Length: 60
Figure 1: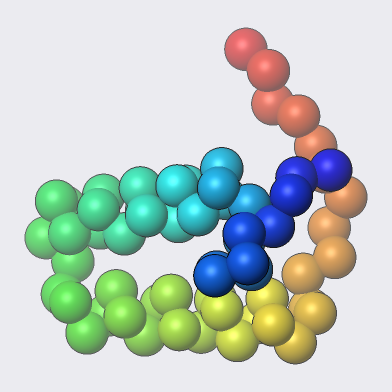
Figure 2: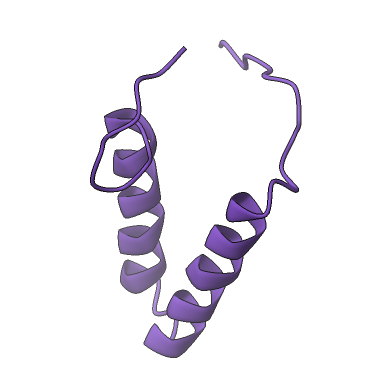
């Protein structure tokens, strides 16, 4: 299990992935307001516990 960071509530690996998605959205020209709303909504969904999918590995 991944250890959560006290500041964000996410493991360092998950926090890096979230940051990478945000940077990819910026680099692909997504509007800043759309990016903010997308991640705000995702955080609300995560915080409310609606995400309960089993872990699946996608190894190449």
